[in-house]
Every structure is written in C-alpha cells, then in structure tokens.
Length: 386
Ligand SMILES: [Zn+2]
Image (cartoon, rainbow, N blue to C red):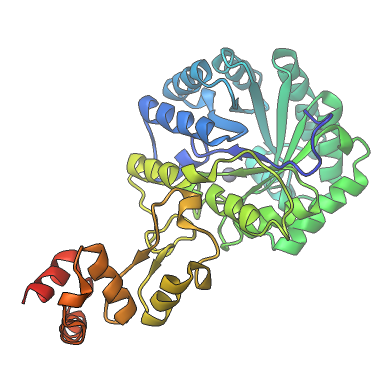
C-alpha cells in the first residue's frame, strides 16, 4: 500500500461501526450495520472498520456479513495483541477481497502500568509477535499505539519501528483521550517521520478524540505534517465527546484546498444522507448548529444575511448546500427576517407579488414573528389570505 501512491492522497478510515458504536446508547444491529457499511462504500471510504470480532458473537457476525458484501473498500476488524483476538478477526474478515487486521495496544507509561500491567519490553514483544501473527493471516496490518499522544517519544519510536519491521503497513498514533493541541500533535507526527528509520515503509495514521473540541483540527494538523490516513466517524460519533467528524474533515479539505492540497475519494454529495442514516439508526441526533450536517448549517434567518444570500449565495456560504447533498439553503422566516426573504417566500408559495400589498403583509408578518418563533408556510398563506 505504501509504494506507488500519490504522496498527497489521504486515506479515509471510517470507524462509525466500531468506535462510533462505543458511544453510550449507539449500539446497532446487523441489518443497520450493513446499511451503513453499504453507504460508506458508496461514499468512497477507503477503509471501513466494521467492528471488534472478539467482543461478542453479534460483533463477529456483523463483521463477517459486512466482509461478504463490501468489495470496493477495505474491511477492517479490531484485535488486541492476543492470539485468539487476531485469529477470530482474520476469520471474520476472510470473505472480503480487501481486508485489514487492526491491532491495538497501549504504549503510554500510564496505560502500560495501570491498564495493561505490562513492562515496556513486554509491550514491544507483544507488538512484534502479534503483527507477525496477523501478517501470516492477511497482507494488510495496522498497529495502533493507544494513548500515543501521551507516550514517551523514545519509546514510541521503538514501538513504531518494531511494528513496521514485523510487517505493519499502517501505524496509527491515536490521541485517545483528546489531549493534544494541533501544533503539538503535528510535531509528534514530524518527530516520528524524522526519527523512525523504516517509517517510509508505512503510512502514518491519526485517530483523534474530541474531548477538547479539537479532533478535526488535530487530524488536519497531522496531515499537514505528513500523516496520510485519518480515522473518523459520521457525525463525529464515538467514545465520550466522540471522534473527528468525517464530514468536517472532508469539507475542510474540499473547501480549503488552497491550504489543504490533499486528495481523497469521498463523494461529498452523500454526506447528508450518511449523517441522517447514522442518526436515525442510533437515535443520536445532531445538534442544529453542528458544522456541515446540522439542521441550521445552511439556514439563514437574519434579514441582512438573507438579503445577501438572495443577491449572491457566496456572501454568506463558503460551500454550496448541493455539495453536501442538500437541495438548497433555507431562509428561515422569523423576527430577524427582512422584506427580501419575505418576498422570496411569497414567490416560492406561488403568489403574484403584483397582487399583494407587500407593506401591509410584511407588517402583519413582523407582528406575528414577534410572538411566534417559527413562521410556517401556512402562517404566511393566512397572512396573505387576510
Ligand atoms: Zn477511539
């Protein structure tokens, strides 16, 4: 995978079905997972992390069903550095034409001491042995150094070098607890690229959590420093405050290609569909002011903005609603709206403006908007019919 690829190509690894499902209350059944996986493939996601096969029989079945139907994306399963995890994972993904085993082990002193209760030397040994075992089962192996952003640099370099020597093609450096600042995380990626002797044999990947609201910023900073795989989820679903949101990453790259000259395969016009599918399945709705997929992301209420939008949408929109799969922007009629939006609404409802006393109707509309938050089409019709 690391040879002969465009150096500016960023691979998109979606973990909605694995990390996303670890959101409290987000568990999904097999049919639901299959429908999400199918849409992710249609969107052009490079790697779909389908689940953690050893976690339960249901997870195993979901990963194996996904592996049977997905042909264009790589199907990935998660495993710890445990023989049975890795073997079950290989079994679950075996039908997929493109498959990956993703091995995870913690590398920070805190996690090694309290969570794993392992010495650094035994962690290195586990990395080596488990990557070699996985490479005997599949060609594509990824290693994650969990809590990588809080790992001692010298030790992290040794872990990465060991994993690559053992045959890992992708090395993921998670900001597991959302601790990093963007420049600090970029420096970590640069440090690995400068210090690990065999780093050119693998792709560096990032996996950022959003505890401080920096998951997308950290992911993009890492890409600018040389990382070439981003792990993310639809709607930013994931443990605690969630993961980096796929839709935000992709629209950043598309909208600011002047600053982020990286290519990817994602069909952005499927973003809204994917967002709605994931929230309807998980029951976790998206906040209205969420970037890209929030209900208000392309809605305008203030009169000044509505007037601008009606004259030229670029005045207040840096992306088109069509580019994310919406029909058009919404001009919300409310107490901040002006004549321009009101007239535009009348036209949309089929009224001939020459037959309407705009001033009288507009005054009535403003009076109503003072006591009612949302003015519906029916409200506008009854104003005119008066
Ligand atoms: Zn995670």
